[in-house]
Length: 251
Image (cartoon, rainbow, N blue to C red):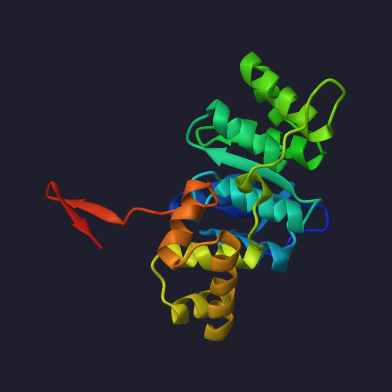
């Protein structure tokens, strides 16, 4: 993508989705709506983190089903690194679990990918003003609203509610860079390929993996990936497949 310099009044947007055609269509729709400029695109978690560091967008739109590190965990990482950044989660469909996790990571909105153009621009304008429009979606589901309220009380330690310790998955014990390295391992990359992808040395990759094994108390990379998948920090993507003449071909 040829990155465009935003006007002084434009809100800056980063789009994170692994489907190029969807990114292109979303980019065109946003910029035609006026008032926003897409300053960068990313197709994976570690690329999203790098682009966010470079461009410091006002709003980042993240596909919930990214390959490798999950979209919700990328949202969590970006909010930790850039607290003022607004997060919009994109999904093919809405379910209570995804909505709940989106609230927990601090997302401002949860939109389905079939949203109409005018509604998308309206939602982005609301998010840019600091509105938490995700609350509307939550309040439309009474059971989920009660679940969110209970979680909020646990986290704030309201009187009459016993605080519970955070689970390992909630604490996210690995650093941002360690998750990036583990994401690459899950995608089958070698140490050299990981080093090239993350712009670090092979020795640094080895150092990060040593730290990951120690923190997760596992013996090898396979166990580390399985632990991360089990806790929802990353996902293992299926191989890319094409249907040719009714037969599946794995690339």
